[in-house]
Length: 206
Image 1: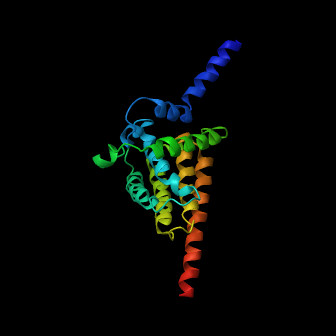
Image 2: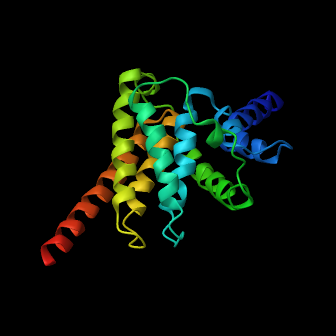
Image 3: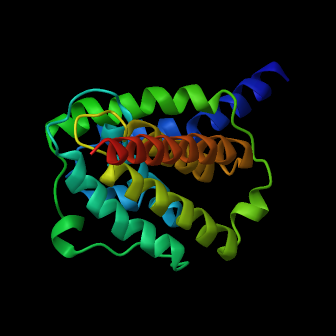
């Protein structure tokens, strides 16, 4: 009986998203964006968006490279709004091999944070999140947050909260947890409000 329970626990652990992502990272195969999209099927939208916005969600200087990632994220978010089931990316982007900075630092950092959320994540209203209309609505929020991060003044740190909102919303989609999605929407909305408020204050001083 005890052995059976331990086997079930091990099985659940293997099915965890963090374990699957770590296994993909350790495999001896080209680490391309296209290969990453095949990891979780229809939820690859969330995975790619999370990867693209993660550097912006970390409050450290990134040398402006995040703007390029955010432009790609806009393309992905638009497809989510349209309700597409399969992610389309330009061939050049899909076959682009992720560099050592991404595979050696960014992805392991994502895995650590994913594991933290996995402790609390539960399938809550999973059926609702699987609906096409719900995915489109979430796509609108994500698109708004990505645009907010993009228009935030460079090196101001104001892109952190909108980007963090995208990352958390994507985790909620991956875990089918409406509570985590709601936390992401709250963080992203607060970030947009901050960008608008400080932007308006700056404009009034000019």
